Image: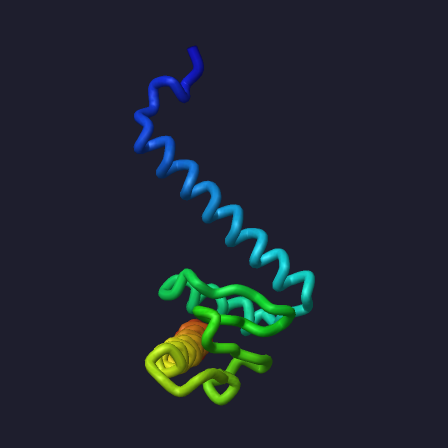
Length: 123
């Protein structure tokens, strides 16, 4: 008897679905790397994909819900599509992504400077 016989059908379906999703995400990431997409573009794609699963790469462009295309360098002004809720929603995600990235950079800089200040005070 194999181990699969002991796993309920619902759980098997859920596990298979999760494995398929993870494989698709890895393939998408591999495609982006091979296409020469910038790290910023890859990170933005991952951020959008967390909220909107219907997004894919089309060469170096991010296509969201078949309605919005984000071209390099992947800023808010690079979001193109028919004016409406989809475009507005994607622009908000892009804005928030870059605000969060900037906040993270500021935090990292302040943490890197903290040991230098402590060393200066102790000498």
